[in-house]
Image 1 (cartoon, one colour):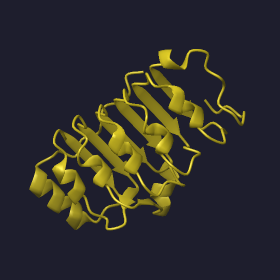
Image 2 (tube, one colour):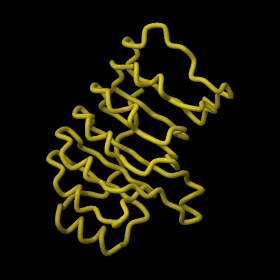
Image 3 (spheres, rainbow, N blue to C red):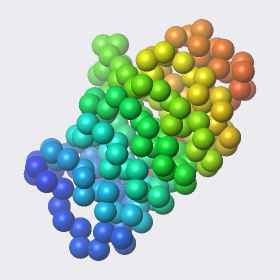
Image 4 (cartoon, rainbow, N blue to C red):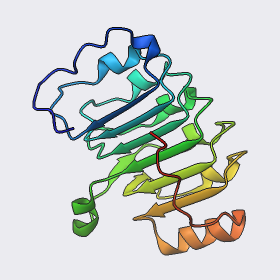
Length: 172
């Protein structure tokens, strides 16, 4: 938490790490996280990298919460996380107050994740501000969003019947 070091500390047995929480640290990159191939849960506040590509190989990941992803413009690498059950992508609360958002190219990466049950997209939205890609989610149980047009959210709710419920909190 709030580590001022510029590098993520070395992890002796990376394959043995199951959960990781990195909260507002000053790390230049989270690239070493890619070696944590046994990771099932990851929470990061202030994601420093410009790509989510380092997450693509985390095949055991079930829970992913990224708070503040200002450099991200695509979530495509998430499409590789076939065991993902919970995805929470948020902007900082201060961004909510100012109306700022993080714009990604598309939500298509989420459409075919077979086990994805809960999605939160707070201030993170695609260029077209549409939730249509999530309509194809085979296992979705809840979707909660902010900073989307009210008409689009109403259309999505009517089409899917999915509740506006918070995703589960991390178990770790």
